[in-house]
Image (cartoon, protein in one colour):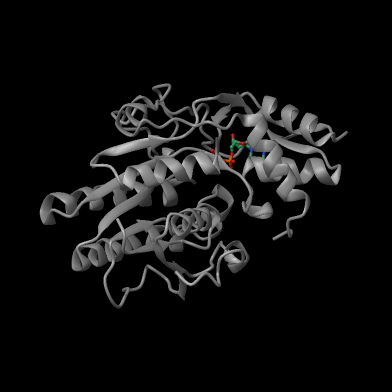
Length: 313
Ligand code: UDP
């Protein structure tokens, strides 16, 4: 692809890293964002780049873009459990109407389309690790439903546009990702633990801390995402790091890396918090020749370094 690329949610954590990577690859980038959970500070390092353009825009409203567009990455959504429970209707609208409007834009421009979906489509999984063929276990009226069902609808709509209108679509299922520019106050476990460790406060381990996640460093994730857009694979594809860790073990690694004397403090486990999560990335390895390269400790070091100087938002 050599033309202009639209990134919705381009001022968010993942979106801003994607914009930066696309600029570095020589693309023209149009970033659309309403700053509901993101910040212009994330784009500060490249906002004056001659090939970068920002338009304040809520993708749950119809979108108008002048001129040619070659590709659309639809990332716009609240993404942390704390954020999407704070903005339940906006989250459903970003996944449903935002996907509808961006698919319409892709159709009118003849652009390729990539939907940023999520491992949350698997819900609290009975199959472990999770392959793309697993249909998931999601409570449609549970506390996480606004995000999970929005993304499940978004996947169905993307596939429908592909089948009905023949547009080139891609769906990535993003597993837990971390790195610089995560908002400190977004409630996710890595920024929460790092912030607590640096402030010498107790680390709020939910429940017994035996639940697991698998954390992917942002640079690996963005590399995978761009490879998917450039591939011919149109079905859902998992992107994540299969290195699985319990929440308690994660807390201990963060204490070690920060040199913090904080203790672990048990905190109530959120309702319907998934027990285990780990991507099966066989498909990504085969189709994209991709796998994460950054080990957890290395990625955490970089994130801690960034968070030492980051604004508390
Ligand atoms: N968690 C925790 N303490 C916190 C924040 C999160 O123990 O301060 C746990 C949470 O209950 C879950 C895991 O860490 O089991 C990952 O949570 P996060 O919100 O980062 O992402 P999720 O994978 O649940 O979307």
